[in-house]
Amino acid sequence: MRVHIATDHAGLELSHYLIESLTAEGYEMIDHGPAEYDPLDDYPSFCINAALGVKRDREA
Image (cartoon, rainbow, N blue to C red):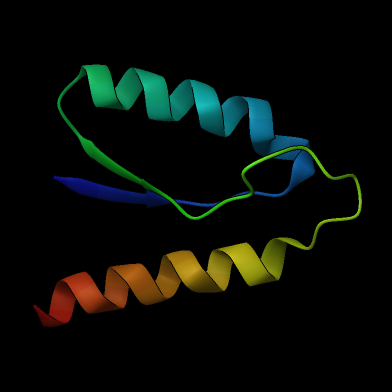
């Protein structure tokens, strides 16, 4: 199963943990960001990309 994940700076550490844990369980994790800590990042830009990824998967 493919899982799309996105966060902002506040959830970056948790998203890395979830990606690691769920990958180990056999899930295909798609990380939409952020790639690194930025206290000024904006969650909506990342979550929109995750939502679009889910939409593309459902259309395929």
